[in-house]
Length: 271
Image 1 (cartoon, rainbow, N blue to C red):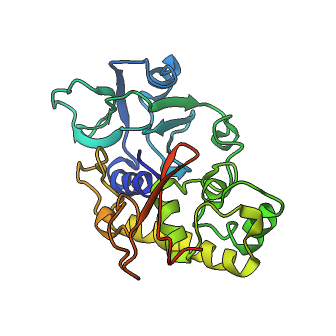
Image 2 (image 1 turned 90 degrees about the horizontal axis):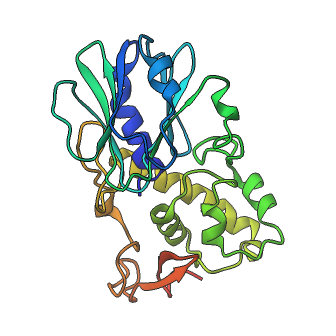
C-alpha cells in the first residue's frame, strides 16, 4: 500500500507539471472505486486551473477555484503524468486531462483508491477532519506523543499507526522506526518512558525523510508520478527480513502478526 513517503513522492513529482495548468476535461472510465466518483468532479473541475498540489495524510489534494479534488491511492494505485492521447490500460480509471496535452491518470487494479470532490474547506471534509498531525510537522513532537500515550495499553506499533493520532506512519515505516529506536513493537504504549519517546519521535521523522529522499518503497505496485519505482526497500533493516540476521547484532529477525499486520523486529536490539 502506498504510504506517506510514496504519496509525498507522487505529490512532488506531479506538482511542477500541473500547477497553473487548466483542466480541459475529466474522464471517468470506472466510477466504482472505494467511494463512487462524484459527478461534481468532472462538472466543477473542467475548465479550471490547478492552483496548488498538497497532501494531507495519504490524500493528494488538487486545489482549484471552485473546490478541491481529493485523491487516495488505496492499496495498489498510482497517479502518473502521461500524454493525454496515450491509450488507457485496463485499470486506468480516471484521467484529469490538461490543456498542455498531458493528463494525470489514476491506475488502480484493486479499486480501493478514491477520487472525491470537496467544494468547501477541504480540511473539514469528513475523511480529513479527524486526522492527527503530520509526522514531519512541529506539532508532532515528544510532548504530544508522550502525553497521548499515558495509560494506553495498546501495543506501541499500533499506537503510532493510528491515523487519528498521527498520519502516515504506515506498517513499513513503523517497523523501521521502532527498530531504529530500539523499541519492541509489542510493548504497551503507556509503558514507554518519556526519554524513549523522544528517541522514537526522532526516528519516525528520520525514517520518513529518508524514504521520501529515496522515492518511497516499492514492494509490489508503487511507482511515482513519472512511473518510476521507489528505492527505500534497499534500506529496510527489519521489514520483510524474517529469519535473516540483524545487521546490528546478527540475531535472526522475528516475524509476528500484530493487529493483523506483518510485524518485524530484532529480539536482541529491541526491548
